[in-house]
Image 1 (cartoon, helix red, strand yellow):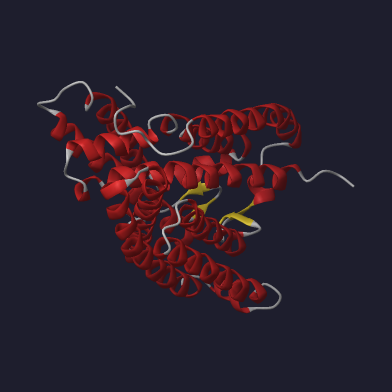
Image 2 (cartoon, one colour):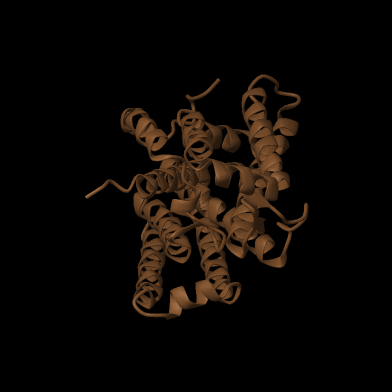
Length: 334
């Protein structure tokens, strides 16, 4: 039986994107929450909680983007022109927040301005990532394997709602991360913010989930036709389990459970997207098989991925293990 290299690579790219969302999502969320913690000492603890891992978290974005260009060049050549504006804004947001993260430690007088930059960069990056997802879900116009739409096709009510949903979801990840990594008054406030952000995230997941099937007939048939309709019941049930786990963890002063439950909400939402898309990689336009590079190229690149991905997983896991536990307010990144 021949190896289905395009599907294997689609799974690798999907894993890289998911890893980026759940890992970089919480440190973007920490930046988004800065306005709710106006004291310098609290913000120092918040940034110290992500300092050892935030650079490494963005490795997955590089892997996902680079892998897409190499393995599915048609997708790279058609999706990027459709999403130039949000992607450029996202990259500028990520660059600016990285600069602000470093510079806020180098000046006391101008620290508040760099804090604003860190927050705005995080907001822009999160919101534009959500817009890009929404634009992809609603469909990209492709003709003769080239983008045939307009400059502003990505800007729709649906994409704005998905942008808001991702931003609020990242805030939930950030708040539950702070609940895990901090203590005292900061942790108590993070717990309260987790409850608010959790409720808002669930509402927005519901809105996007109910809206999506009516965007395209393919989505409607996928979610309400048999046998895929099984997942349209099973996934929401698992989302409800995660929501209960989130609420229970926050109301009983659990530290790790709310963060894992919040991650579960993102993973299940991502699985829902996968169910809606498959076998398309660009919904309604390009299938995984149509968009893939030649098998010889996929096989060659797979050898590198077989080495690279485990190495990334190993050093990422080691970093989180080394810096496990609560953040000491008197120590950290300087």
